[in-house]
Length: 245
Image 1 (cartoon, rainbow, N blue to C red):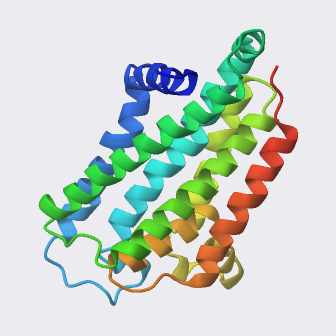
Image 2 (cartoon, rainbow, N blue to C red; image 1 turned 30 degrees about the vertical axis):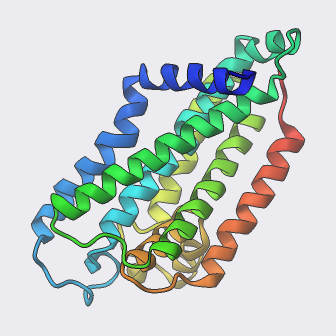
């Protein structure tokens, strides 16, 4: 077993020992779907705006899973490692500290995929709704959403001066993004400018492209492009500003 696989195994064990992270990935999205989805079970939907679409809730639940991992768990873990000088100590060993970052991203990505599978199964069997109809487009939208939101999370980890700051910046960014995604107020009821910003925001574009693929449609290419551009820009800036200590 090489150094990276050992780090991934250790990070996975640490993640699974943290009940808050497990709640964010598995319990919260499924709970939200049941609370808001059960009253709509059996409804025809489709003509009541963004929140009337039956695919909105599962897409929002998946985006919540990815967003919480990216903006809460990932920056906090890296902030703690930097604050406790774990990265600096690793630099004095044969293990490159960059491997720890890779291991963190891999573990959070795997947990995001696991949370997505649990959410999809819950939608299918608990809410009696169909599985994603356009699977290739769904996979593309999911991967771009993950890349975009993880890049934002890595940028927070790069800029936050401490673990406590990372814990504050993540939620401060997450909840406005959740609003722009239409979680509380459908975007078709927002002012035009605000709705347009929400269309191309990281969570808004993720929700829309996942929902479109779930319904069997093709996601809008401008929104997929916005996710890809944000992922590239966020990754470049995170690499530029990341501090090991």
